[in-house]
Image (cartoon, rainbow, N blue to C red; front, side, top):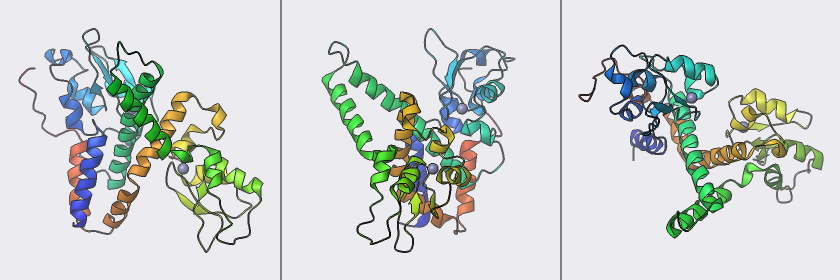
Length: 306
Ligand SMILES: [Zn+2]
Ligand SMILES: [Zn+2]
């Protein structure tokens, strides 16, 4: 398989696990949107999609919409400006931070990072439902098949996210095999608490990596491991949460971090394709194509139903 084919496969897979990543997918979700029928309404399906929202309309709440990058869900009024509301409510949302993509070409890394965010949120919402089924199982409402699926998904998430806790990260620092001088227990504890697990090589015994952001670094014993994590990778989810002590996490925060590790692991090998692509001249074409997918089209065709 050529590099371009691998890259296209990667994008297709990201798109599948990151629904509503593209403008078109979000726009399509607003079929027959109430405010589109009023031509002067500021809050059109186009404005909503461009501001990052997809429709979560129900019979009782026909103008609700949600951001697939930060889970912000609002009920919109006719003259609301969706972009201004998004910015005000969630200034740190990944989509808000890049600004509404228009004709500007986003970098491949930006697009993949948005896709990973979208995939993380989608998986979080799925797992949230699954845990709910596990906790509130009621044979009159849930089928046994759903319960079995929920249990299987919960176990699989637990198994793929062992490095979520500092204790498990601490266990990765196994120096018996390599014959290194073992760092003191307090150093290893500080490392694992700061989010790092071992990536020790033959050259360095304090080589570490972060399971949440895949940053890798080699420390010296006197470094401040948490401050360095913040400096090297300010966008890491573990760093952004800013609660190195697990006891401080809410259940939602813990689930979101667990899901993040699982999504990052899923794309670990594929990240290598991206690294290779950076040196490839075909990358421009691919990036342009992807940027178009993310941006609002220059000529927007209103649907017949409007
Ligand atoms: Zn958002
Ligand atoms: Zn990190």
